Image (cartoon, rainbow, N blue to C red; front, top):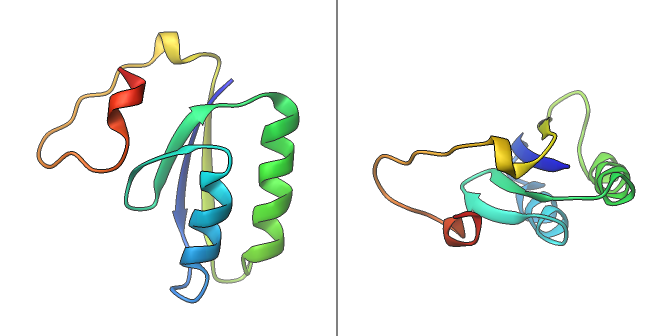
Length: 87
């Protein structure tokens, strides 16, 4: 499955969330990561992130797509992170 992760967390937890997410996904822009995951890896990532965040204050969104083949991304402006691997 192809996963896009978007997060909005308290500044005190940003580095931990990013470090954890980068073990599974590729950073592409501030607070955005994406990549191909197995179902098991996806479950593990969610469990690790749930231990870090405060559910009353933080938010993490997962966009789960069947495959990267059916996605298209267009960028306007500055390229950040690791977009190159997706093309």
